Image: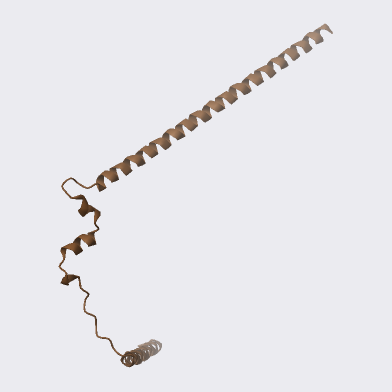
Length: 141
């Protein structure tokens, strides 16, 4: 019996040690997981900051490209192209182009009727040609 008590005592002490080691391992694992998450977040934040810095540099470069050079007056740059050109033209050149003379409704209606007749004639001739082609195909010519 003495052996069993020593064996049971050894088992208990091993089980207790395993529990303590397991708790320690959980702490270590959670610490490692926390450190990995922090490192991953740091990498993500670093990449985001690089991307933002690159975009900011691009915007700054575009602003520099759009800036007015020193040899040009600022007013000419602020005006649109059409306003600049318009101010250089003479007054008569700005007038409207002459419009076509207006026709009466009756003349316009006659013109559309004429167009309808012409379209009908064209359609009829196309049908005639198509039927002649189909007849040739059937006869083998």
